Image 1 (tube, rainbow, N blue to C red):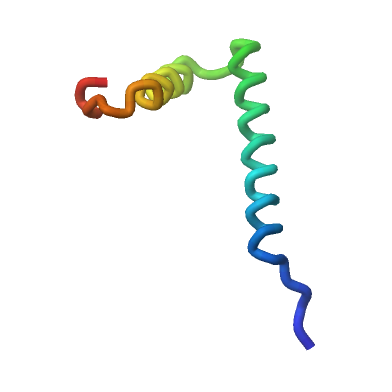
Image 2: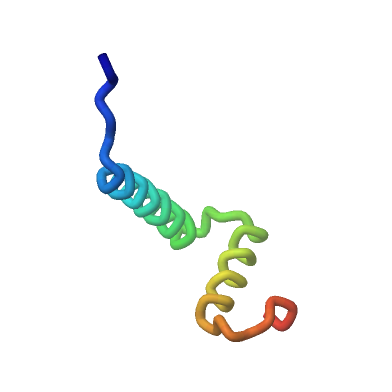
Amino acid sequence: MSAPTVSREQAIRNARAALDRARARRDADRAAGRLAPEVELILRRLERQQQAPGLDRAAA
């Protein structure tokens, strides 16, 4: 008597789908100007770091 389990692959697919939905909501809010200024600043900083991964965090 065991409960049905979710395979590892299905769990990963579910997590990726949830992350994709969250990113879509964030992008829509950002495009509509609904993000707080400090959140927008954080997103821009993260984007800069992703574009230039060789830079030191202090320099970014």
